Every structure is written in structure tokens, then in C-alpha cells.
Length: 276
Length: 283
Image (cartoon, rainbow over all chains, first blue to last red):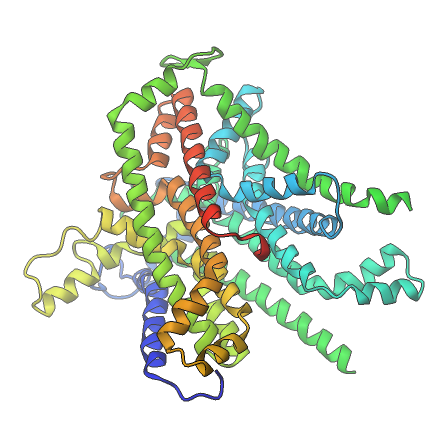
């Protein structure tokens, strides 16, 4: 296909793709702009001057409702917990699935079921289970488990993709050279799959950090950030809502760029080592 | 030697335990509680079918399920159409691997940001005094602001397409990238037109990806409640929303019965998709 001239289809689809990207980013851009709304501005255009009033209001002033700082800290810690657990558990399970073992079929289908079962069911189920067993739901216990049921299937599917393309000759070579299984893993397998693990971590963190439905019934007394933002949508009618949207979106984008940058550096370093 | 034999079991243990505790046990609890009884202040163990009876015999339930299925069908059709062409464009029209990766990431990044924020971001665009209405009025196309843009079924579908299209793009892109380019070359040499190549070669080979994407979109829309609540402004109903309302009223057994019915329906839909398309070789 590569040698061909561009047909009319190319230009039609390019326009379509451009519209799709505009559709994805357009709304987000409007709230970026509106979060710099002047002190007397409202929730829609036109801009009534520009100011940092709403960011100041968000970050430094006491809100009438909600606890933005606390919710952010909880979501951040929960996201990191989910990220680390997802990376370790998916990696282990990915290694297990490289060989046949009793029950591998059912475990695989169970993992897929975890993706398919609607979030609100997980939320309700974990909430009820905690109630029935007399446990107090909290963001670090029940919500943590609820998030894992969403991040682990993604983690495992990424590990499948990684190990399907993994050349076992590297491990055989290491073994032939007398490496122990642990040495083979630590010095051969791990460095090769490290960029993918960063990807799994990125998924684990962002899916948890943004999760709403699974947290609703499981977070206990204290809100995570998405719950807090949702609460704000019903009470707050000033552009501080947009300022919050801008800040959390920039934070997410920062995390994504950090992860992508790390992957790029790891790849480059490996390519250089192979070349050198 | 024995260690290497038990190694896979040890490695699979954490995943098994987490799924047992936070997936199997909660669903078992839901099933159990769906037979329990309740009054206005508490729920108590029993074995009654009233929750199911009340759910199934109520016309409200039927309307809600039909409304949810309506959203599912519309969103599925739109995301499939949009997702397929986006994936097709990336896979067949972008020539350099780097450009492909960059454009794919451009599509992916919004999906890793908050759903709630992405829903909120439609307000200044669709609202009564929003950007779209202002523009249309300035252009003289309409005299009065369109009321149906925000807080309507239209807004719900738009937001869902906005939120869920990537779940269609990624699996389809993945299958399209695996199509042997020689097959397309061969079809062209045999005299096939572009349209024939699309319908006889590419789409049949893309079916597993389409099926996986469909499973994602169907299950996400069937269980959705936050998009429906937020974007319809409380004017539309969905099964998830009905459950959320029952939960808010502490009618857990009723919500549980609803959950069991929803789960069965979702599993039937997924089963139907898997019946049509074999996705085994994709995994």
C-alpha cells in the first residue's frame, strides 16, 4: 500500500479523523479557557475578562462544600496503591499463564468476567459484602479492591500481549550460561518487559485515579476526588468547577507524559546498549 | 524441580485471591441479598421472591430496560462506525510507524483523564447559552436556542460516544494491524475494487476486533448510570440509574435483584456476540 498515490479516500478520512480529534479535545479546551474566566464571569461564554481568581479560590480558599485537598490526597494514595498492586499481580499472573496449570482456564475467564461485570454491580456487591460481614467500608480497603477488579484485567491482557511476543531464546541462552531462574528473571526478562510494566502502571494509576462508579458504594466515610468532583457539580455554579477540571486534567496529562517519557527513555537506553 | 512445577500456582495465587474476594464473593452476596427482605430502615435475611416479582412485574422496570437497550444499540452503532473508520485510517492510511503511534496516543490520552470532567466539559458547549447555540444564532440558522442539546437523550448518547469510542478503536486497530498486507495486494491483483476489498477482505478479518470492542461498549453502556444521570439532567432512565436510586433509598434487596437481572442480560448479550464471532485467537 505504501507505494501508492493518495486517493480521495485519504483526504475524506483525514478530515474525518481531524473532526474526531476535535470532538475529543474541543470540549476539554473550552473548560480550560473558561477556567480563566474573570471574577464576575459565569459558566458559559463570553469571557468576562481573564483572571486566576478561580484557581486561587480552588487552591487557597476554604470551599463552601467539599474537601478538595483531602480528596486529592486519598485519590493519589489509592492510585499509587492500585498501580503497584496491579503491576506486581499482573506480572506474576502473566508469568504463571506462560505455562499450563490446573485451573488456568477458569482463572482466565474469571479475569475477563471482571471486565464485563458492570461497575455498579461490583460497587453494590462489595458494599453489601462488607455490610453483611460487619466490616466498615473505606477507600483503602473496599474501594481499593473494587479498583483492582477493573485494573487487573487490563494489566493481565497487556502482559499476555507482551509474553506472546517474547522470544524464549533469551531465557534459554541465560540458562545455558548457568543463570539461576531468579537471575534469568532479574537480568534478562525484567529489563526487556520493563517498558510494558510502566504501561501497566500507567493504566493502573489513571483508571483508579478517575474511577467513579466502583468507588460510589465502597469509599466509606471519605470521598475520593471523582466523588468530590461529582458532588461539586450539583452544588457549585461558579467557574471554580472548571478550574478543578483544568487542574486535575493537567495532573493526569502530566502523569501520562511522565509514563510515556519513561517508556521512551527505557527503549532508547536498551537500543543503545544493544548497538554498543 | 518441584519448585518450577508449583511456581505457576504461586504466581497465580494473588490474582485468584483478589478476584475471589472482590468479584466472586460480592456477586454471591448480591445474589443472596436479592432474596432477602427489607423495610424502610433495614434489610434482613429471608428467602423471598418478592424483589424479583416486584422488579419484573413493574412497567417502570420494563421501560427502563428498554430505554437502556435503546442507548446501548445507538451508542454501539455510532462507536462502531466512528471507531472502525478511525482505526482504518490509522492502520491503512498512516504510513510511518511513528506517526501511527503518535496519532494513536492522541486518541488515547483523553480516555485516561476523568470521565466526570469530560462530561462537565460539554456544559459550556451544549448549554442554553453555550457555544453551539451562540454560533448557530449568530449565523442566523436558528432564532431561539436549541433546548434539546444539553440534559437530553441526545446529550447522553453524545457523551457516551465521547467516553467510549476508544474501547472500539483499540481492538479494531489491533486486528487491522495484523492483517497481512499481501492479502490486500492479492485482492487488488485479482481485480477487486476498493469497496470489495473492504467488504470481502478487511471487514471479515477485523471481526474479532469488532466483537471485542462491541463487548466493551455494550457492557459499559448497559451498566452506566453516571452519564445518564448527569447528561440527561435526571430526565432519562437506565438500569444502572434505577439501581443507584434504589441504593440511595437503602432498598438493597431490590437493587440486588435488579443487579442479578442486569448481569444475566449482559452475559446473554456477550454470549450472543461470542456466538457470532470467535475471538479465541485474538487472546
